[in-house]
Amino acid sequence: MRFSPQNWIALAIAATIVVAAPNPQKNKRAPFPDPNDDDFYKNPANITSYSNGEIIRSRKAATDLGNLNNVDSFQLSYRTTNTQNEAQANVATVWLPAKPASPPKIFFVQLWEDSTQLNCAPSYNYLTGLDQPNKVPATIDTLVIVSWALQQGYYVVSSDHAGPRSAFIGGWENGMAVLDGVRALKHYKSLPSDSAVGFYGYSGGGHATARAVNLQESYAPELNVVAAAYGGVPTSALLLFLNKGFVAGFVVAGLSGISLAYPEVEAYLKPRLTARGQQALAQVQSRDFCVANVVTHNNFVDVFSLVNQNDFLDQDPVRQVIARETLLQAEASYTVPVPRFPRFMWHGNIDEIVPFIPDADYVKEQCRKGANINWNVLPLTGHAGAEIVGLVPALDWMGKVFRGQTPKVSCGNGVPAISGINSPSAKQVLGSDLAKRLEELKSPQSSLVKLFSGVAPS
Image 1 (cartoon, one colour):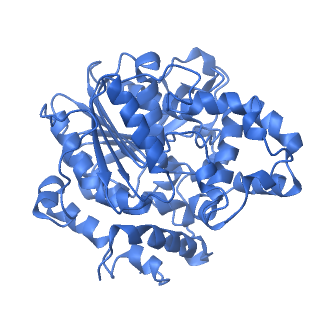
Image 2 (cartoon, helix red, strand yellow):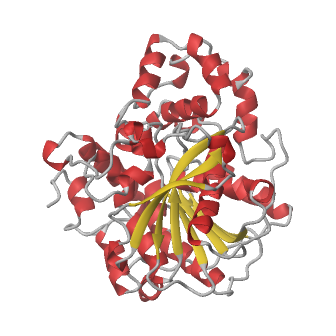
Image 3 (tube, helix red, strand yellow):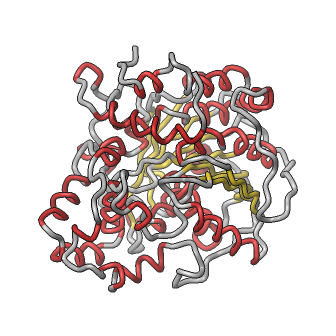
């Protein structure tokens, strides 16, 4: 059974449709309460007395990831900052390597949560014992990514980058949550101040990665970031690419997330929402409305039918927020930073969820200003296909950077991609066991493909 990269988007959508169907036998309880009801996630009364990244609480937390490596995992509650520069508590999951690399290295992976509800957060859905539709993003390739990093001896951390408000696409808030997650891990393990840090993310996780990269120099200049690998990134804040399309549910989730990150946008939109708009935003913020539901609801919706003002994107404060959230200098109201550490970026050139052109334009803008970007365009590859196809080359590049062997390319060019996830090169990067697991994502016997086919996984 063979799947070309462009087939992956159809398969991924089919998977979310099947996973979203109720199945009481597969809806088990997590070892901790729903984050909405769990004091671990709450702000302490003295939250302002904590510094950014300082740990508020910690607890051991068994996860479905990392068990291949027989390592301990923990949840950390730490202080971060929201878009209004207010203190708030956030949660990250960390995995401690059995044999840490020397000197220590930190690998930060961002998951594509793509939701505006707290119980969709990665920290909750990584937990062993939870088995429900919310886990979709945590069950595809994240196991391979985390396991690879632990094999290298890296400390691995993954934050709830949307923050306690579940501010999906709220880039400033997302980026600060990521950077403070690095600080939290360093505090927790008393790691050296100059520990090398590398970021990884795709799609919504790539968005959080890109925003952390954008903010690092100004918000967390003490961090020794040496690399960032991210793909399929929504570089521009405009969401019209998906409007009235099959996955227009992402537009509704994005509108919800921006409203949660910017109360002034919420205050502007609330009295202007149509009855359908009120229902759509209430639904997308409700419990258990995670990415599987985001994809399978509001299909083909016109976002302008949700608001009683057709030019609302051109009105303040919405217009101001769009100009603040974009990474494209041509659209931005601020000077977009140019990080000097090396980056590996990739994008499928027929991406049907996140437009390719803005990302390519961003690379051009950054390269003209002296950036170091290894830019890889995946031909005839859609959004979900690029997630799988780009994984091995990105991890291979990341490993080389951590070893001080950064591939030398002129900015905007890329190195030849590793051909095939079951190639000898992929096995050399991942090891035979992980390469086999990645290959199983397209095997007829894998749980993922069974979901694609509508067969309940065993």
